[in-house]
Structures are given as C-alpha cells and as structure tokens.
Image (cartoon, rainbow, N blue to C red):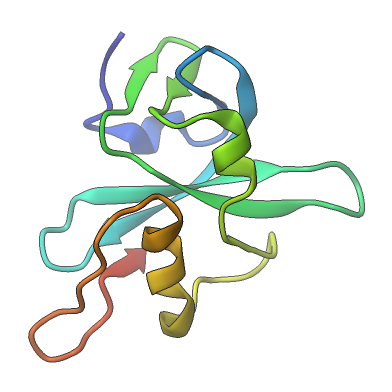
Length: 118
C-alpha cells in the first residue's frame, strides 16, 4: 500500500477502515480551498431506500490495488454527517463535518469555504 496522493483514480472502489472492514464505495473528493489538497472523501453507503454519502477525512489514508484504507473506524464514519446521493455539502454544514472527527475548522481569511468538491 502507499499514500493516497492521486486518490481520484480510486473513485468507485471500496473504502475500508483501519481494520479492513468495508465502509462503502468512494464517490467523490472535497479539496481544501486554500491548498488544493484532497481533504475529505464522500463514501456511498446504504441499501435501496437508505443510501447516502458520508464524509471521511483523507489524512493518513492509503491506497491498495483494490481499495482505499482510511484511518477511521467504520462505525465513526457511518455516523458522520452526510448528504443525499445527489446532494452537495452546503457551507453551513461544513463545520459539523470537521467537528465529527475532532478536527479544527477554519474559514479562509475572507470567510470563504474550506471545502470544495471536484
């Protein structure tokens, strides 16, 4: 395994926790707007009628040939803030995503968003 530098290539592949338990499927990436570094991923979880996209930090994530391994427990990730499968993270919900993982959230110097999706 190696660090997830070009994680975009793993979209559509499984995401597993630090124990190797499958969480869901990598759906999209959210970049830090100041550094342009992928900071969070959304993971598609659930079954028909209960599908959603949960957020998980990419810090410490590593990739293997067939999955992305994150450094957070499956239960913590599944309880994370989420959006609908056709939704987007709004600015007001952004601090809750960081807080769920005990991470500091700071806006830009002019109050701009910290995360942007690509």
